Image 1 (cartoon, rainbow, N blue to C red):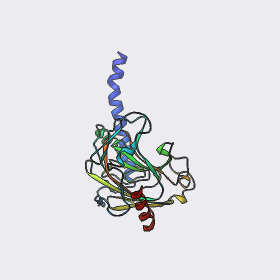
Image 2 (image 1 turned 30 degrees about the horizontal axis):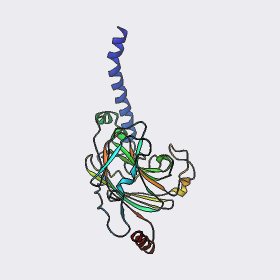
Image 3 (image 1 turned 45 degrees about the vertical axis):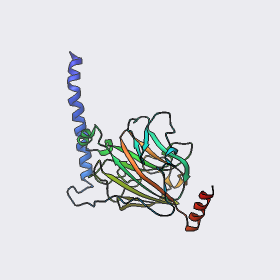
Image 4 (image 1 turned 45 degrees about the horizontal axis):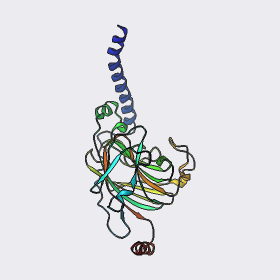
Amino acid sequence: MLKRLFRWLLFPAVLLLVVLMGALHAVNLGSVFEWGKPRPEGKPTPRPEGMGWVDLLDAEHAPLWKNLDDDRKVFEIEAGVLHILGESLHPLHYATYTGEEFSDFDLHLEFKLSTPRIAPLAALMVNPQIMCNSGVFLRAPVGDSPLRGFEIQVLGDYGWPATKNGTGAIYDVVSPMFNLARPTGEWNSYDISLRGSEVTVTVNGWKVIDTDFAQMTEPIGKFKTPYAELPKAGRISLQDHGGELWYRNILIRRAEGPAATVKRAITNLVN
């Protein structure tokens, strides 16, 4: 009898807890966000063209994306689109470009998110963090977790306030100026530039972050390592955080002068 009563009360108790958590989160958001006020709307930037740009999803480079954690299939590449299957939440997995490491560069990529089955729960909890979730990890050191680099957050948080854990954020460290995410199911673009310790992030045509890691000499947020001490070069990884999504037009251009670009092109032709 007691077991039946417990089971009968469990669901409404959990539901009430979820609603209360959502209400508290909404109050917190309301203190920093003016609901109903006009906000900017961005549009994806076009695929870049010109000397120096390398397509990391073309026939030459696509085979160099790997899941380095185990033999599990967590992504597939077809017709220039990298599809993260979204079937592994724990442990986290990554699609990592293993062709080379990058230090200073310009990176363009586009992504499209799906709507997870738990979307109604996200609405009840007033928390987009449990919507479709991924991340672009940069300067991830070879032989170590991508978490040892840094992450530009990818999240299904269209219409929500900009936060340090939202679209375009340097995860848990730097908040974007605005949340420029497009609605779920539409393509978004990131244009990211790294020059030494300086990082800029442009989301759907709007530059929302312009920061300098050299100033971050103490730990910030959840990370124990000061960002001033992060690796200065590394790989690019795309996170599978349990949500299905697609990446396309992943193009990178090294930050080097025209002479170095021409020399690199000639070397590639000779070899």
